[in-house]
Length: 112
Image 1 (cartoon, one colour):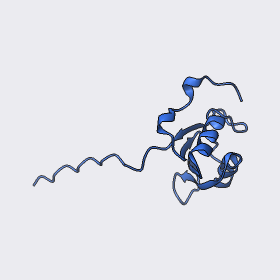
Image 2 (spheres, one colour):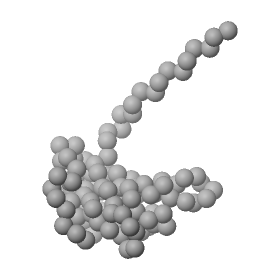
Image 3 (spheres, helix red, strand yellow):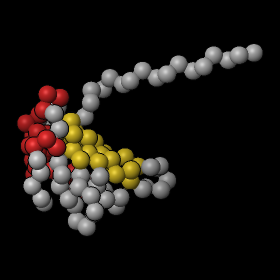
Image 4 (cartoon, one colour):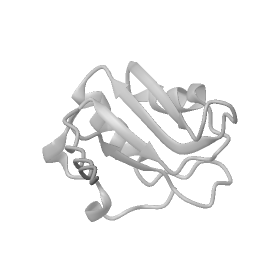
């Protein structure tokens, strides 16, 4: 793991116990993601998003919830920029945004 500059670490003002992870290998499983975060505390929830349920192919995006903000912060600081195995890229770990979703655009009115 190479040393990274502090400007690459996500903004701590949005600290949360919920993390967004991307950039891990396509073959990475939910169990492997949980094992990656477990040394930093209790993993309450761990999900690897799939392209579709039939293929089982990962979108290389995961959601991880730790039991405390401190545990999530420790994991983020240790794993942001971490390289997994032979994967050519490093993983990006960020605090997840709040549950408030962006409003959907209104559908265009039907013209008759």
